[in-house]
Length: 141
Image 1 (cartoon, rainbow, N blue to C red):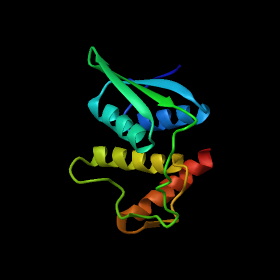
Image 2 (cartoon, rainbow, N blue to C red):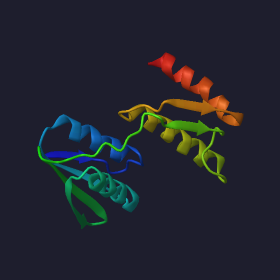
Image 3 (cartoon, one colour):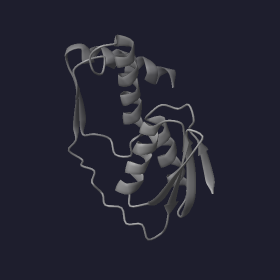
Image 4 (cartoon, one colour):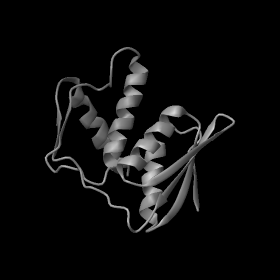
């Protein structure tokens, strides 16, 4: 069994860690540990959507989710090649600017981790400022 420690990680990292671990095995069980209910629910939703069997246990305010992958899991491809993402701000949501910037950074990072990239990403208004940040980050790689 592969064990993944995502305690202290904020979304979307627990999901990304789970997806990467499941890619590494053709069949078997992984166990991911998280310390917040939202991550637990997101992992359960992911497992359900991918038709994996999962079991969740809670101990001492920690959640342990076991996901079993078999050769007979049938995964429906719900992805579309025609997805266009529109970004009109350098922040996500309204209110605390620092939180909004962190959320947008997490969203952009998640886009780099998905298997099928969108057909296009359209930046306008303050979203245009993100393109210079993305270009700078790519240079650092």
